[in-house]
Every structure is written in structure tokens, then in C-alpha cells.
Amino acid sequence: MAVHESSITTRDWTLSRPELDTSAMEVIGSLKRATGLLARALEPLYATAPIAEPEHDILVVLRHRKGPVIARHVAEELGVSQAWVSRTLRRLEERGYVQRQANANDRRAAIISMTDSGRAVVDEFFPEQLRIEREALAGLGDERAAVVASLERLVASLRAYEG
View 1 (cartoon, rainbow, N blue to C red):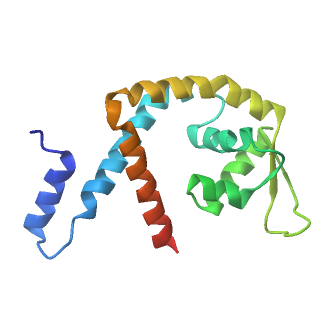
View 2 (view 1 turned 120 degrees about the vertical axis):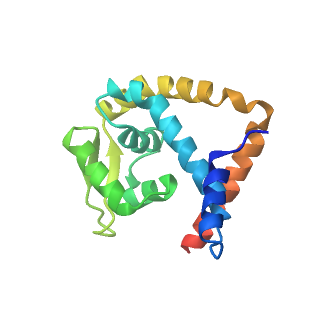
């Protein structure tokens, strides 16, 4: 049986600081490694793209929305801070991929819409991203549905913690 990297780290911490509860390290460590490895797999694609992967994530969310979206809803869907979305949207707007408009009902909640240029970028790069991700996840086989279910429970747990 292979020893997971997180198990080694957990064991090291348990030996050096036995009073600490390191039980979360296996989940969080595995999640961070998986995220990092996926980012590395996508690096060649985004090396040629006019946008970075996080910018692309926002454009993907906007791509099939029926009409404009409030920036806060994009942040909620991606599970990131509103401040991060605001900064990223500013960069996308500067390059002509999105448009921001003032919200007549709430001055703090900008209304976002995708431009034709933004749509073209998503339509060009998203199919290749999906191919890379599909190939990277092929090793999950029949366990894929169980992994997705576990990750959705993790998301729900983190959202509940966030309050």
C-alpha cells in the first residue's frame, strides 16, 4: 500500500506536536495538491491564451448567463471573494472582455455582461481546457461520481463554516 504525502506530513506533525488535531490535513493537503497538479496540466494552454486561467473561470461563468449578472453572484458561484472578482473583472474590462454597468437598485453591486470578444476567447479555449481536464481525470474511472459527491459535501461543509 502506498503512503500518501499527506500521511507523512500528518505523522510528522503528530510526532512533533501531539496536542494538535491534524485530521484535516489529509483532506486539505490532497485538495491543494490536486488543484496544483491541475493548474500545472493547464499551464501550456494558458501560456498561449490572452487571459489567465482565473480570468477564464469568470468568463466561463458568464458565457451562458441569460443577460447581465451581478458580480457578487459570480463570486458566490466560484467560491471566491468579491474583492478578487472585482479586481479580475477590472482587468477583463480593461481588455474589452466584459462590460460593467452601475446597478440602479444597488450602487455597490455592479452589473456584468460579457462582450463578443470575451465570448470568442471562451469559445476558443474552453474546449481544449475540457479535453485536458477530461484526460487528467480519466484515472478516476468508476469512482468519479463518488469523488464528485464527496467534493460537493466538502463544498457544503465549507459554505456552512463560512456562515
